[in-house]
Length: 115
Image (cartoon, rainbow, N blue to C red):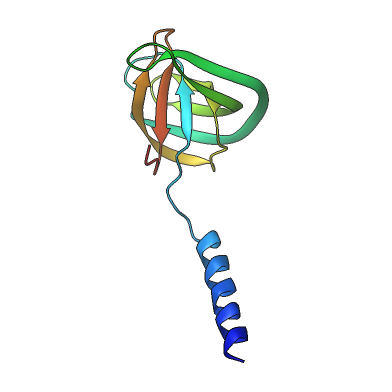
């Protein structure tokens, strides 16, 4: 009986852990347009063929891969299709510049990104 109770408690804990929100390490490639500190994500998305931001990192050999595009509104600019590796829920998100790559790509962490 104890084994069944322990197993049930473990399964309930695992389900509760998966259902609770947590920070993600999602990235967005926002085209070069000055300092971006916030975006508003819309519900419009596209699947793209793996776009790679290249020329990143101290040695210029690093890269990031993105498989989706999401329409985001950048304050002062307007709507822009942004490469993302994760589909964000609609609404305002804080944007933190993670890296400016040599080819002009700007890789941002959005919202609760712990990148």
